[in-house]
Image 1 (cartoon, rainbow, N blue to C red):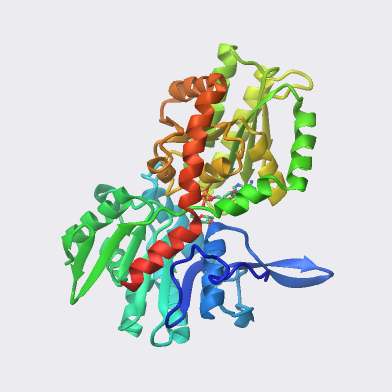
Image 2 (cartoon, rainbow, N blue to C red):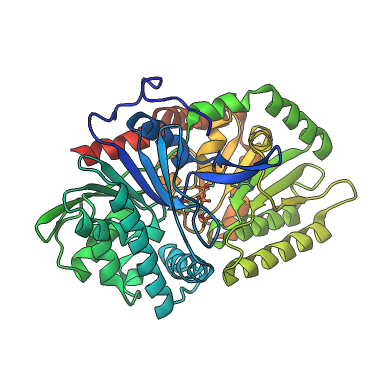
Length: 475
Ligand code: ADP
Ligand code: F6P
């Protein structure tokens, strides 16, 4: 595992381990297996959570409890620098029922405003409970008095309560990376009380937005014995604090990467291939129905139909990384998007001038940064999103303070990035108009907006996020 800056090397870090270690509990471990020189080795996975927490874990000699990514027996616990990695096993059947089932076919659509119909199955719930217990027991086994435990996300909502029973004095925090839906939607879950009580086992509950925190508090007061105000719930003989902590990115790393020689060379190569005079619009997402990839495709179709801009002038690149391909809804959305791309290109492309480029793959970092630096307009149009880090990564790469971010009002990021051009993804005509507005926006206006967003993101990076949460948890 590559060593990153420690808190000592990061003067902005406020939270230090005066005592005890940090134990992170998340569905996935922060490492994955790769082939290197004919051998299989563990490599750090890229991503905000790992970036933010690794330095703290290195400092405290902490531990990370998570699934290693393959089914069957788990690898033996191992150490990477000072971090203890504790793999939790998942069987193939549990992958289907706990991960693809209850986590991604029940909770995921429900929490994203039920934009796909959530499926409820008792066997999925049983697997969710069983796997959550396994994670809680693994965390309890590494816990020592004085440690802080930070549990992450919707796959593990029962863990705080289960761990509280096993280690009553532990300091436990929980952060939900996705939205927490309204009371009315949450009421559909047959075992709703158990989920809420599981979360209430934490001392501090963190959400991406204020609204998600309020939704949780209201729902907890309705379906459990919890009382109190939105930010402080009394449950049994304990207090559970609730607050919003919007997650962010490693702003400085993005800035640095965007100006690196390899990214600039890559960007120039892509520009030459696309046609140096064409203006580039971009979308970068996991292939997920919450992301509104279809929305921006339909809006682009409308822009091309109006013919103020044609495939001669503009090109839209959609990069989509495959995701959760065992869940039926994901398979369906993939074919509908691919059909849409084919239809638009059939109608609007010319030889050598393809209107929509659709890349279904995980991009190497330098290629992703090259696209961010090339795009004049970034389209982020989720129907609902906890945060959306792409919306923060794009401004971080715009060192000349140019480019336009088009951002759905239903992404958590919209609460912070007020200078983006906000769109309602349920209004395709409106999105099409906003795309035209973005393409016409003058340089001075672009600069005004981009400078403000970059200033905000520089001050509110992922280190700041982790510090705020852990700082509040220690209080
Ligand atoms: P989510 O967590 O729902 O996937 P986010 O937008 O918050 O959505 O985070 C997605 C992360 O994945 C970002 O850091 C983004 O750069 C990365 N990513 C998305 N699509 C790709 C891709 N095709 N290739 C490489 N990285 C990608
Ligand atoms: O946004 C929620 C989230 O679980 C992220 O934490 C994760 O990176 C992404 O979705 C992909 O999830 P999965 O682990 O299902 O591939």
